[in-house]
Each structure stands twice: as C-alpha cells, then as structure tokens.
Length: 363
Image (tube, rainbow, N blue to C red; front, side):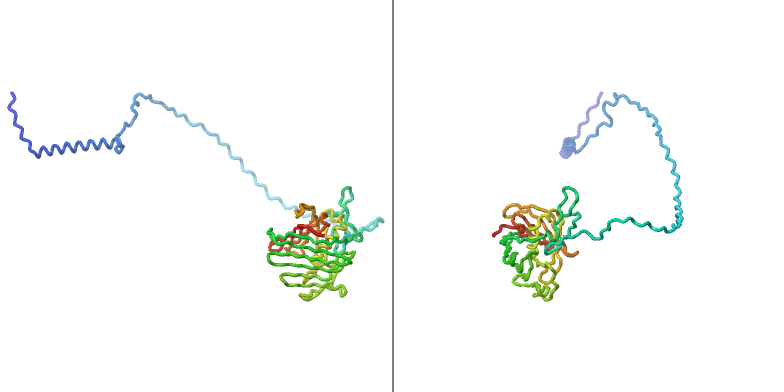
C-alpha cells in the first residue's frame, strides 16, 4: 500500500523564468537548424552506397594476359666503304714529232671587217645590217634592212606651233609650247614651259640643209638668267660664251633641242629604218658647258593619249651617257602629226618626272 505523496515543493518565480528560457533556446536552435537546411548552408550526409546496392548483382572480371608484341630485329650495320684511292696520274705521252702542215686549198679570202654601220645625217646608226634588233634576215618575213648611208635623207617638218599640257609628277602646270619655223635655208626653234612660278625657255637658230639642222646659236633661259652657246663653223669650235671655254666642233653637232628636230627629219624621210626596235642613232650634242655624244634608241610603238585622242607613236629614249647617269629623256613621234613629238618626258635623278603631252597644233 502506497504511502502518502510527498508534497511538491512550491515553484518559485525564478524557476519558472529559467524553464521558459530553456524552452525558448531549444526552440530557437531547432528553427535555425531547419532554416540552414532549407537554404543549403548545412548539407545533410547522404548514404555512402546506393540504396539498391544490395539487389545489384556482382560482376566478375577475368584479366587476360597481354599478347606479346613482335619486335623487328635491328638491321645489321652497313659496312663502311674504304675511301677511294686517288687515281694515279697519267703518264705524260711522248710529244709527237712535228709534221709539215699541208698547204691549204685556194679559196675566197675571209673578211676581217665587222658588220657595217649605217651613218645618218647628224648621227651614226649602230644597228648591224646582219640581224638583231632592226637588222635583216635572209628568209621570207625578215625585217627590212636599214637604209645605207647615202640613201638617208633629211625631210624637214612643216612650220608649226604645238601646244603641250605640262605635268610635274602628274600635277598639271601651265601649258608649254614648241615653235618651229623654217624657210630660205634657215630655221628657228623655240621651246617654252612653266613649272610652278618658274619660266624656262630654249632657243636654237641656224642653217637648214640636206643634212638637216646646223645650229649656230643656242640660248637657255632659266629663272631670268641666260646662257649662250655658239657654233663657230668658220673656226671649227663650239664656244661656251657664258661659262667660258670651247671644244672642237664635230660634223653634224646639235644642241639640246635641235637634236629632237633632227631626229624628226630622219624619221620623216626614212620611216622604214625604224621598223623594228633597237635602231640607235648617235649625235654629238652641246649644252651650255660641254659637248658629248648622245645615243638615241628606238624601243617600239605605243598608244599615246593626246588632246586629239589616242595616237600611235614611235618611242625613243636617250641611253645613259655614263654608268652613273640617272637622268632619263624620252620622246614619242607620231606620223599623224608629221612625226612631230606628241609626248616628251624627262625623269630627274631624284625621281621628279616632267611630261609634255600634245594638246593641239597650229600651222
């Protein structure tokens, strides 16, 4: 029989507060743990093996031994060849006894002369008559031979004033002019052009005969400064009046601009001579301080655009005078304008290119 219950001690207010605090802390810890699980900050450990691992049958693996790999035997080393023995020097053959040479049979004597050069008025052609550029052949369709020296003539073009568009490195400048007049055995040639604000003028006067131009006075005007060269035929000298000094006057000598009209007259009178590229004329040309040979070579035909449209023209160039000569001079002559220049070009050593292109001609 149970004894009487002990009376519970009375709960004090402090004990009640402590109990509530414990419950509140426990509740807070539970809520925080659930929140961390929901936002993924606390990961719950999962199973270390799949849940259905017990039902998965075990697989047995049988390991087979690897097949042996056949290794190719190494090739036997090649035997080294002994170095070739030097060939013995051939024994010197005994010199044969000299035998008297048989007398040659009589025949035509061999010519020791080179190919003939055709000479033109005011210049010497340098294309051989036996072939090459501008030469001749013996079969059908061969290039016609240059005319012999006595057949070359000079045919002066009619008097005219030609106007040229002027360009410096492709930039257009004021027009230039060439004035050519002749009559009564005399001629006058004037060339004028402007580059930027500078004026350049060249004048040549003299006699005109069967051999072409024979200059007597040549004047260059550059930036208001004139220089004069005189051809003294009585004294047989070229006199450089402005710079002093003189040189012997060769036959057919020309000045820097009369040489172009000399070439024009040769082409007008002998166009068949320039049927193939390579024909070269040699002129003796004087400027205001020197006299030297000038070689002008025909290099072919080109279509040149002018103020009157495209024209077919023969292209000539001045060959370099020396190894260090970097100045290039070119001229194009067209039959449609009486073989007068339709284009002139001078390329300076620094690369500056000056062009005169025909705009039109006045009789």
